[in-house]
Image (cartoon, rainbow, N blue to C red; front, side, top):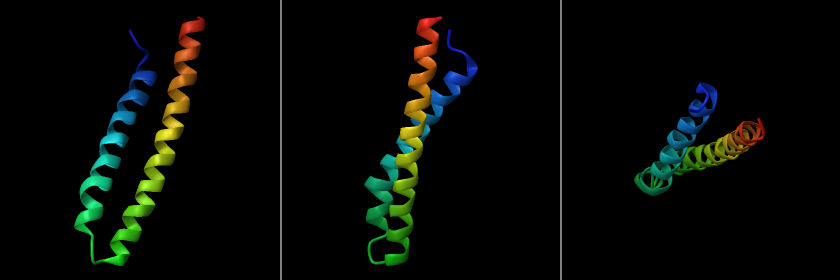
Length: 69
């Protein structure tokens, strides 16, 4: 069984990836014609990708600790 903290990180990874997919595949297209909205969604993509990288690093660190214990 996973510790709650690791499970939470993994669940958030799923949430962030689903959100990123929605932004890239739907919201950006829907924003066509509005430069301000497209700029907002591009910034969100950058933020989500940074969060995903950080989550991935944290998850790997926790899994490594779990395995070595």
